[in-house]
Length: 481
Image (cartoon, rainbow, N blue to C red; front, side, top):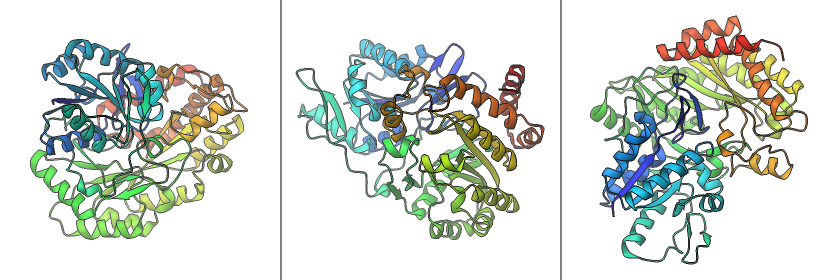
């Protein structure tokens, strides 16, 4: 059986979307991209199939920036029997259309994977012509599906699979237990992927993407991947010596890379683990700058100093809200004082800090928005990002807004975190939440003090152009509410 795994093209009216490997799939202006993620779910699945001897082709149409016609031609040219496409909430209509086109061209069966398909498998199978949904962490599920299709065996025992039975009824099998040994997986497929295209704002390109763990022990209600791709509260790690060996292999085979991005949900969970990483890297003859996603309250200045000595140059920290009541309500429970200490300690260690906020969380009001503005202006990160909170199927936050009647649309294309709100809160309409995100951007992101820091942080002309374009648009809209 021949299998194609794809991150489909996603373009709409001059805008370009990111999906696979992205925790907040979104679509932006053609040149506003400072983040193009590596498609880890597809790349790991491809590697598992290849290890089993299955003929595989992987196409990252987003990473290669393929137009639809070239994407369709590329996939069809492989003559696949099974096509596995990653989908997301915002891109579902686009992906459904492309899947139908591929089915007509190739006659192949189609499977969808990713957070949206996992969060709503019945809806996906009901609203599309695809044959299967692969739930959550799907490497082993896909491997068993390929074997079953080859042997015309029943599908009912394949955990982590949803499908239509002979009567056309949707069947959702039990979820598959999470992999206990991440190091038992082959390293992700990289050979045919556009490795020079993947990037992270502020990281010198080309960027090497790495995973050292999966999941997160924290249980933020809005967070997508830990609740859908894995299991809320689950956290598994790789042996760090294996991680370092993989880095060396990648650098030797595909390099040179100028930076490394650990794309773990939360990289700095265990202090002893961070010290072990320092020990492994300290005596290496190479020193590649690296960064990670992190929690501010898990860093202290000593740890930051030690990590900076072996290459840490950037951390990306989620704050979400400057209102302690909202922090508690969304189960993030982040002491905002630790954010200030983390930023100050990072800067003393020579480490840059990127901070993210999101507007429209549970309990959001204009008062809480002002507290976020005040807090964001009181800290001095090197860069910030603001999004509109979007409840994705499969998350606790989505269930909450549906239960409380706060969801204002079921038009999936609007669930893109950047254009407009799809919910209201008890105190704010969807229109006010959208307005509030723009307001915070103007008050904070384009304040003179932050602009100076942001200009220093940018590493490419595209980042500078994106900053300028956003600024012109927001300033034209005015600063007031």
